[in-house]
Length: 438
Image (cartoon, rainbow, N blue to C red; front, side, top):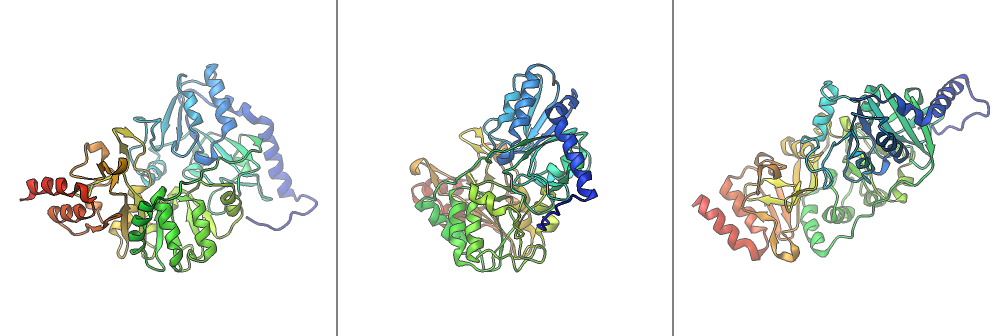
């Protein structure tokens, strides 16, 4: 963002975009009247849900002024206000899945969604987004929720923005000009905040094993959860780490300020942390506002295999619910209920698995339910629970150690994974694989 102070007298260019902005503002929520039956509606998500627009959309749907539409949203991490459309003659599809959306979601990766949009197989007619206030050139930022929003805006016949004075103006290729807006409403409310739970002692034990495989100068992608928070805390001992990830969170600020994350060894984006979305506290939102060292980029960039291949010593560090003795990973189904979908995990793991010098690290505690249930299991229960297939297996980490699976045959994998299971469950795992392999 250009931080040069504006002149006291607006230029012709400034007058032009301000007229466009004011015209969209006068139109306001009435622009929802342009939504037609059969339209596919994209919505900003997570901490950037356009709450005012969603509330009006639902109200009009209940009055049957809007019918036959399909609303698409990244549901996880949001307040899921859009689910209020249920019970009307409109459909809600999760771009990713969650407990509230068990069956109607995208069963493919983030980058595959980008490809479908790029090829015209997935298109949107309406885009409802939350943005920052405009800069002096008439551009608004998509702030901390970029994902597919720029592409959706450029595709859509109708674009309506909720312009939030408290949305940070983030840098990166995520700005849109006010000329693209058919309607807008100005709001001023805090973004939703998310505070991650403190890591347990077991999570810290897992993290210590992970950190051993993250050298100075590596570029990391990292998921969320107690173990991931513990990994980030432990990386304060590393130097010149690069960050290229899906989600930017508060804990990353600490590493940047300590000088552990510098991004100086990257070929591209040298000196810049890259993320696709942000979820955290007010501290984080203030930190990323106009910050030239943190860029929020489109999924078309953050999850692009060609971009990921350029990252030095890339480490994809993620958690899982279960891993079976062949190295299959379940990150989606818990106790028979879907809590997620593949999302970006498949994109990052594939990049790490097939790139020279890169590693994919799946980290989990060995048990759940107070040690009663092993998370290293003989076999995943159903095909639906297979998030990562055996060909993608690389490293699996628990508090009991590290199983390196790359290049290992089935029996060798089973032995390595049994060795990092909780000792209370190793006998049953050993008995299971011996029946198969002996």
